[in-house]
Length: 553
Ligand code: F6P
Image (cartoon, rainbow, N blue to C red; front, side, top):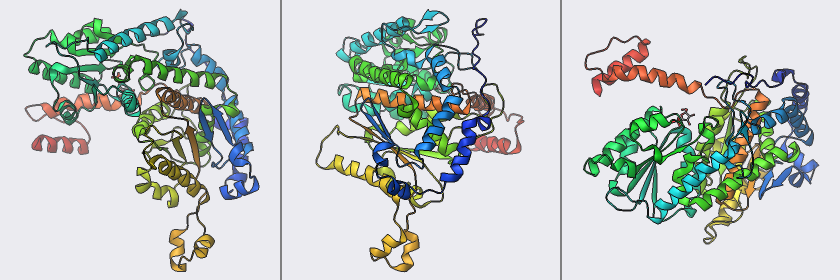
């Protein structure tokens, strides 16, 4: 929809990154500090480990094992100010259309606003509508949980399957894994996202259609994977229940912004949970997209999670940069990305429940900040978002950490740990946390040839065993993994992503790049399915691949 007259957002002019005075000062500063070793920085300042930290909302952020000095952090904060951060934060929370390429407001913060607050979009307060949907979700989730929502054959729902992809899958899936310990043991929750039928087959294997509810999530209701899987699910259900079409109303609910599309698919719009175009897919799991999660953990826990998001939103909006947790993470990211030219960042949660968190962050950060033009559409003259990757510790230690310790690449790492275990079983938690701490120590300080010699290592082996150290890490210690702290953690990274985008001068809220592949797939599909050999007009590689596939399919 075109913006209303006068509603288009035009941020105050900010010079390109390289021309901002703080960026130029950082360049000079970088030449002074780039060779400094963390070992020396810690020796020179014994208070460093306590000083280069920030604490809020039960989160302790230790950034002292980064290759920065107090001056670096001051200059980076100045860079954020010169990038117009304060104005952009106010614009986001104020409902302005800061997603300039789609001319939409960006209001995931409204999804967790308290009932009595007011956030205006084109002069209308959207908060009452957010709470109306939350109440609708709570009512429905409670009925599924207490068994009063019955399937077509009169049996209660035991299995919930979320169908969606990207933001309509990764968010609820990550959060469900994270909060499994809080989930109802009476319900099985599964996820189908991939167009590959194996995903569908495995997710439905062994389930009784009469006890299964599908939650179909698609913001646009145009996504090929989701609509194909939902259609297969409908066939599976009807085949299992004797073809009675009225069963759809008992076994399918939809979460979307597209009411017409949902109705056309055959889902009763009374069973539709809406959200709004001002919620980006990757910022949406605290909207109705979180319905399957709410069914699993219950409305009360879901609201606790929203309270966590809200607390981090307030912290982000109100706290000066020097103590602002999301901003600090973003400043460090910019430092490594634009000065050290680090290509990737590893996110390493030391909690098995967060095993899908890196995958979730990949979409959040890479879809948001994988951009090559600025807000005005001019090519940027600097690097933007890094590659995000990771796995839970300690597993990753026995797989890829070697490259972080002794490889030739600089890979800044975020280590995330919880002080209180959810399962105080034997020595497990102390051992887990000892490993987290040991890794950050080893990466920072390494092991020198002298230390190895003193330990009696033979001379010929020493070069192989030296760990140079000076590998930067940030440690985030959180009290305990709860719905509330998960909300805070996700909001922490959402706002980090936003601050990075502001400094890079890009639109963090569109994703035009993924459209091209979708368009081309639509062209290729009929060529794969055609009975007679189609005349192919692709490049010679694609043409050959299509021919081979057609021969062997
Ligand atoms: O692949 C791009 C994308 O548009 C994501 O941004 C989004 O989360 C996902 O597809 C799913 O979209 P939808 O919720 O509209 O089905």
